[in-house]
Length: 146
Image: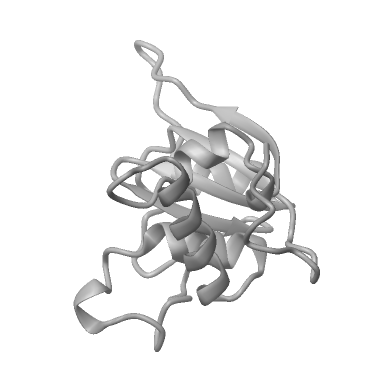
């Protein structure tokens, strides 16, 4: 069973030289069902609030920032002698819901057991996953109070 779906939520919205540098925006766009621009604005606001030099999606997910719609978090720590959870195995196990997966230097979106990304990351180890709810139509970028 192929769980990977090639999908570029940022196509047409970002510069050509940033094609592989916007996985946080693409994952948030796809998992929460919001526009690329809205996802970028949320991450930009979070970056400023944390005085960070880059987007901080993972920190916002861990802190359950309301703008990210976190329902629950799943951790997949390394256990000596056991295989790590991969994107493929995650999709087979969690066939319903919307998730953002944290992998090595990358994040990707999963919707109903399908991994949406610009490249096939189904064999990458998953460190953490967050189940998120689709955004409501009245959500605002400024609703970041925890």
